[in-house]
Image (cartoon, rainbow, N blue to C red):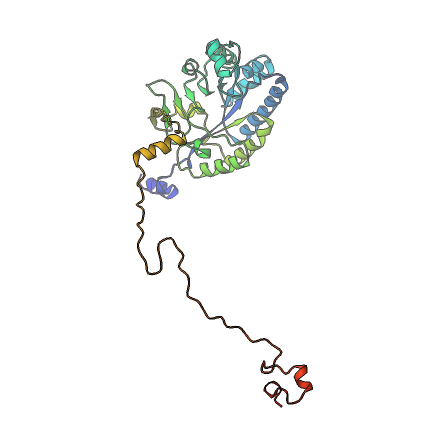
Length: 360
């Protein structure tokens, strides 16, 4: 017994986990494509989804597949696609729900809001009507009767209350890649049945590198990554699974969302209540310039400057200009005469005329 304990300490120093580190889940969102001309995009998405599931099966990674109501109807309307989905579920992949509320740009068309309220949220001029959460869950039941995991973005209170008990899209544990780091399971406020994890969407090269760095630095916990089943994100999905293959070659730490939350891998915490929003104080309008000047004059009246009295002075009376003393003006001698220091032509023609200048 003691020798076995010593062997464990040598193999896993510092209390490291026997399974080699943090667990992880990988989810795939399958959108509604309920816009005009969206059918070809839905078909391309399904091809990308098939490739993602195949790649995950080769790497031993179990996926959580989140479907919109429209996507569920698309799969259920074809027996071959429905049988293929059942095979994915039998292989260990999870089936979940994906809903985008009316506040989002990619609204899937389902909401429990009333006509006028829905029109206000959608910024529509006329009243709107939409099927509610009951119709949404009925469409998902075509794939699987009991849906445990969901990604519900936006939505009204009634829709959120009827959402699946496990949630991965409504809680952010941080910013950027850190939002996928989970060290605890958060319970719904008020003692509700819903449990939530956070996830990160590494859709490009920078996102993949950030997610790799975040996951590699985890010694425990669960990291969550989510992708969309589109050809544009297949490359990022491939890069992420390649990274996971180096970190976990056998896929032994791969989990679906429901197995993470039902398997007690993380401690549970209560979601802290949101702080009440503090309304900013209304700024008083700036007073007019004239009003400010009048208030300043009233607060500090101007003091009169005393006038100086005239004082007698030796140099004259106040306000008169004192003349300066006269100076003797020296007029310089003109050039061209004897004694100017220049022996000019005239003086040279007559020797002895000006010895002072010519030295004769």
